[in-house]
Length: 247
Ligand code: BV8
Ligand code: ZN
Image (tube, rainbow, N blue to C red):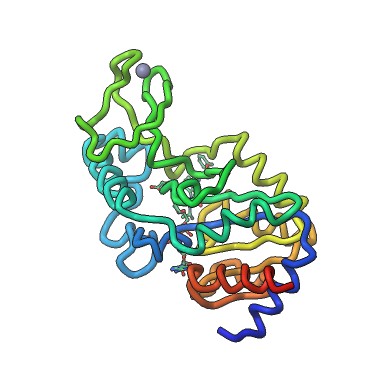
């Protein structure tokens, strides 16, 4: 990746007042957390429906719980990487800064990001299938599978958004509002194939925002980017941050 693209991206970011950062599994790749669709991805050799849909959970809750328990165990060993850290420091650099993530690993918060918009929920929250009581749960491993609701005794599920489920309306609305009004959208580590989250890129571009894509490969929405930085986020974000500090 050339310095030319980095300096073009820095020149776009420097004057920006309202910035939206939109991330996917790629931002956690250098923390050792598996992505979904790359080589060795979570969906490899698995049927997504079987482990990440309400139907799959209904059919075999223990199998689904084992899939999430495994991911919780892997993420519990992971630490934020420089990309998470830079994205966290940017919340104090711009007049208005929003971080919307498709990730459920909590690494943005671990790096110090506040008010993270978790579009697809979190591995670290569980919800009762019956009374809907939702709680944080950081236990690895879980004492029992499936965990049971302390309020009504029914089974609890992981509080992530499965395929065919709606995203939390307030979270999506906040992300959409940020996309409609931002000067710059920085898209980091997403294949941009899952909707409605990926729709944020088109909304921002349509509203006139400058779009910077950070991804070793072209995402499905690379054509909407003004600048594409074809390298790992853990290398690119510190370079962008250094460029902003020089100015
Ligand atoms: C919805 C949480 C309304 C769980 C996830 C049929 C029926 C129902 C719905 C649909 C349907 N057909 C299509 C849909 C819509 C569906 C959808 O978009 N499907 C796609 C696959 C076609 N969407 C939904 O179902 C959504 N809900 O539409 O509700 C509705 C309701 C009822 C009926 C109809 C409609 C819900 C979507 C949310 C699903 N939940 N995850 C969990 O995590 O277990 S999605 C899952 O994909 C993750 O959240 C993930 O974040 C997301 C996107 O993936 P990415 O983050 O982009 O990761 P990926 O591996 O794909 O890419 C990684 C990228 O990183 C790559 O580009 C790679 O190059 C790059 N990279 C790698 N290393 C690095 C890097 N980048 C930078 N640095 C590096 N080092
Ligand atoms: Zn309950």
